[in-house]
Length: 205
Image (cartoon, rainbow, N blue to C red; front, side, top):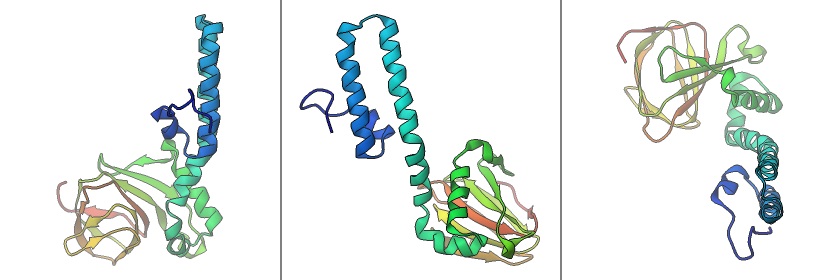
């Protein structure tokens, strides 16, 4: 990797925007070109063109690695997720790629809850399937399940009156089950959820 100036380190933002050494090398060369360009082309138009070129390269280079990294975070749970949603690995990757788009998420029943809907395989046909994201440290009020619900923890964790559930844990709630949740304080909670019907909120958040 060629540094911007011999013996110097890359700027911190390069490491944040380029997740691997190949992209970091490309950005390093672009930055070096911009540095060499500045004395000869000192007018604002030249600098603007160079800056736009750099930002374009960053956007193109970071798009797909970030998407792949997002899906790969959940690969250890793909064995459970393929059975949970009755989807193959390729379909799961497509789900997580789509879930990276903010426009695919909908507001939940509380301000700190958001919902992502997906279509599962034949084994879960007719059921409401998707992902649920809850902000860290927040509660989910006591509620009753009007119909069975299955929950698989993907990230974060929660306490539900009786025990702690963390990544990889599966919780099954039967019709009529009641409980309240307290989300862990370390990170946001991400759940894979399949349910037959809505829940009935009994308490206040």
